[in-house]
Amino acid sequence: MSLGFIFPGQGSQSVGMLADVATAHPSVRERFEEAGDSIGVDLWQISQNGPDTVLASTTVTQPALLTASFALWEVWLAQGGKQPAAMAGHSLGEYSALVCAGAMAFIDGVRLVNLRGELMQKAVPRGEGSMAAILGLDDDQIAACCAAVDGVAAPANFNAPGQTVIAGATAAVAQAVEACSEAGAKRVVMLDVSGPFHCELMLPARDEFAAALNAVSLQMSKIPIVQNVDASIAGDLDGLRERLLAQLAQPVQWYQCIQAMATSGVDRLVECGPGKVLSGLTRRIDGSLSSGNLGTLEALNGELGDES
Image 1: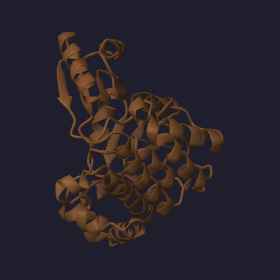
Image 2 (image 1 turned 180 degrees about the vertical axis):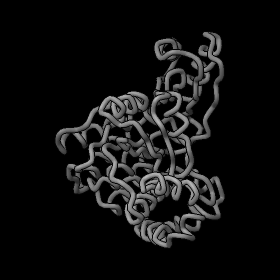
Image 3 (image 1 turned 45 degrees about the vertical axis):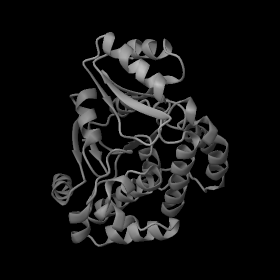
């Protein structure tokens, strides 16, 4: 069996996440405390006690989720878990993959995604942008509905066939949602997010983030990482950085990433982070892939048992 690891993005966080894993493996809390110290935020306290509104703030969510994924990865390796043949991460999760693969130092990753969250939030003030999940329409139909409205609205996450997230200016997204409903969407869900990520409204964040990204030491990892913007594996550091920068304002091609991993020979995907969002998407994308997760102590031990 060829193993792939996938790393979740915003929306997978929850108050109390990894509490049982941290009880059994104190290194988890230590990583949260180390990460929190590096950005001046008590990440462990917030992740365990909330409130939800603080944990959901993008400047907190991004470093908290990266830390959760890295802490689980370290436990996985320490307990004899197998090295995956490939990795991919959804949006923020791409940075978790880079840190876990050894392409970026942990604290560098924490500081970088904390800044990423700040810049994304600053690019569009809260309330001026929104995101919505569209279920039951194909990609071309959704793109046409977005193109027909006044203002910015565009596909932002191609999560699975028939499940796409759109993003843009609040009024334009509302028009696109109405158009999608009229076109036959089975369901439309407005997302509780702090900004319209992965669309052109994020372009103001690019220059400052590019400077920060260029200042971080990167190296090519031994584990291939399938990147969001084009489901490819960068062959050099310049290409790696270019795709990370492009990811800010271009859609996440998630189901193409999963298909690329499957084409490379991966037949089992393990979600390394809290929640099971990506595991659910995996089943929608390719029913031949088996999936699992590490987000609870029971799940972690189960996956480790399967590897023994």
